[in-house]
Length: 266
Image (tube, rainbow, N blue to C red; front, top):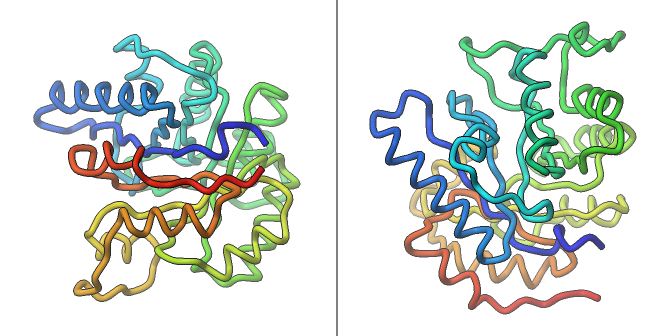
């Protein structure tokens, strides 16, 4: 198994383009990014997460001349771009030595363009999803990138598994789940069904209402939740893959990561 798949994948959120304290937030992004790489983890940079217009990770890496280790940087790419911008992102990744991409449909809003099937030379579908985006990248940039996809265990199971089959057929090489807070039977069935690495996502914020918004089902706000204990649990339950850390508190949690015992399957 490639070493990228069994490490911590730490989410690094680029600042919103309309942030008032933009320089501070850009500097904070650069500092967090370098901390993740220095610790030997993989920095995972989102693409307009939750439909918020943000800077592209490739832009900030280029502007700040940030280091890139091929195994330790992952860029998210979604379908809410013009084809020109999409190709610019992909070509910049190539120039910077970034090979790992997480290909997702994404969250858009009225300000974002949306790729059309005709933009990508694809016929027979009415809209571009992660499947079509995978096909385009594999066709136009064959052999350049290592492509991952998302899996949502909260959607109807059979539909999500069928969609995963189409993603793998389109070239997906690894999977990152939506956040789980305990051993998840749907994720277990996914792992038993496919032969590519599965990285489970840990929710590192105590704000469970945000997790409810993310996964689409209600979690009572008064639910007791310990993110670090949950992360350790997921490490134990899913030792053969890495863990993706979403919404992590860099001040309080980052230094604790090295203290979490790790069971590795060889």
